Length: 236
Image (tube, rainbow, N blue to C red):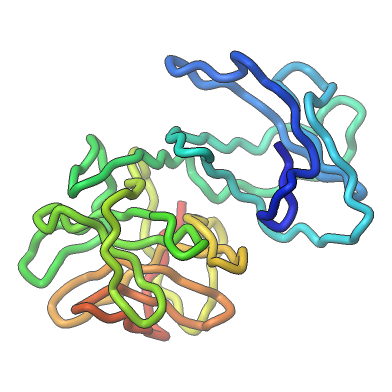
């Protein structure tokens, strides 16, 4: 489906039986050109779904996620333009990352360690749907839960996705600055992209979310959502 402003009814819908397979990656392309968004399969220049928006919408960010309770991995490549299409592409900032669904404190194989609790326990990079957004946060395995910062609180979430198979690094930033190739891990309830950040605080290195328009990194810690203007951000 194609959905505008995350509201129903969907503006376009197309049945796609057997288009995915649980045992292998399948390749697709997505194109935005003169108000028309379209999607098709690799090696086929004809889209299987498209829709034209008569309202001007500047495209600044491109992201992917699963829906309807599904889980999966995405590998984003910037390839050559399709035949007959001369437009440019958008650089990838997902670095072949893989988000693996989990719950109850479980840690998938090859989970990315992003910090440590004040006790020295490893903290893993996660994201979870919460209050209309998809929020980065931390997994504390010994607590049997993950946490995301939102609304001034450290919010426990039982179901989450863990960042795995990721070879990124941390870059020092401040006041909402977003470096090239920063990992886009989710979005706010208003649709603003959110990035993975971390902060040294009270003997811990705690993972949270960077929201550019707020000029800070928020971390879930000690029952609260704390904000810091100096932080590190995860990049590919």
